[in-house]
Amino acid sequence: MSLIVRFSDRFVPERRYVLGVLLGDFLGLAYEIRVEPGTEGYVIDLPNGRRLRIRDAFFGHLPDSTAYLASSSLPRGTRIVPRVPFAPEPDAVVLFGDGDVAQEGADLRCAIDIVATLFFMLTRWEEAIPDPSLDEHGRWRATTSLAFAGAFLHRPIVNEYVEAIWSSIWVASNRGVSADSPSCQRTT
Image (cartoon, rainbow, N blue to C red):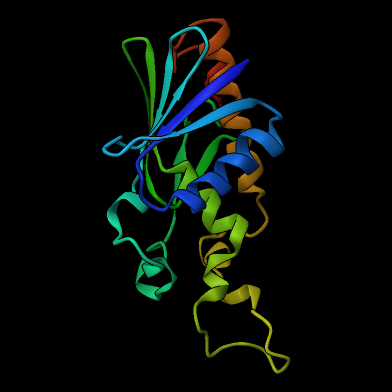
């Protein structure tokens, strides 16, 4: 299976990095990136003509620079959203966007900005922000992290989102798109 991933022409290296880790390194999928000015969010075209549309709630709203390295660009907290379709756990940690996943015609729309979330977690971006609470050896304290404050320090949320993307791609490719499918709903 070969995917085509389209997104706008802003923060291309950051987006390529995350999509390379997600689709290539973790999932081992063949994919082609197409940078298309004006593309809203992230559009993943599947071989069967269906699409996954993932919201861009972060990079598309910043000036073209490293402005995201300012403390004002850090997530303003986290939300734990119950029963997100395709999520491998009974709830999902949401840093950017909201927890809505819905079918739109033959497409699947995800309002969680998975790319920004993975960028935040994979790069340990918050550690690039000057922090006066480093320990005596100049190390970042886990207790000052967003993961600690949001009570998800113990969760492998990168892996959870990898599983969610894999499940959504598999269902959309093999059975059609349905966020209401019993295999995509978690029960508690």
